[in-house]
Length: 234
Image (cartoon, rainbow, N blue to C red; front, top):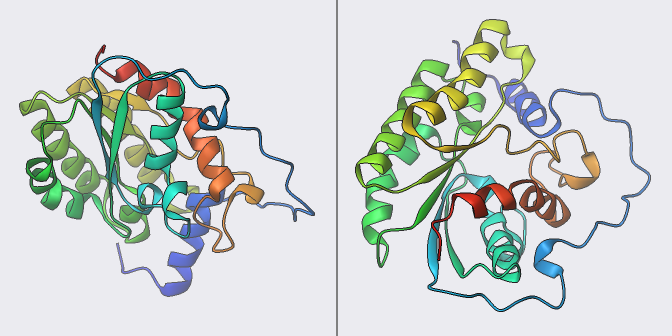
């Protein structure tokens, strides 16, 4: 595939955030519902603390947000608010492709104080922006899942969805990779991480790409039960 032009890349960014749907202008955002992390009173976490590695790109790195507003931080707060003794280590790097993630995964794991009890693997969006082939994305994700399987670390795989303007064959191959890999490697699957925000422009930052703090809370609400269910019992 030829290198994407700057304008095409920008359009793809919008597609990733808005699902390539035309969004009508918003005159004002409805007040967001309080997240699980904001519920009060919250039960005190019980049992031994679990270590979760959040390994991904800018969607985990909290691009454009305050330090406490990123997905790993809000997920940790929500889980602890629900009584789960969890510490989420944020290893999101803005701009990472699956190839970059593959290169740094072992180093990241070895740098932790101990083996994590669960890894959240969220990569692939930047592969779309660079026009990388679905086969390359799939191979890199498979290598990371294989490494985690060898280390006997359970995984939640966060799926992405290709924008339709990349063509039916590309979309079919890319979108199919996540469920197929989750089945092959025994990972828990979140079919489409951005499901609650992709068509909600009021939950997207002015860059029309990254979720707002309220959008992050929506993502946490979308995935908290899945992550909690994948955690080893305390």
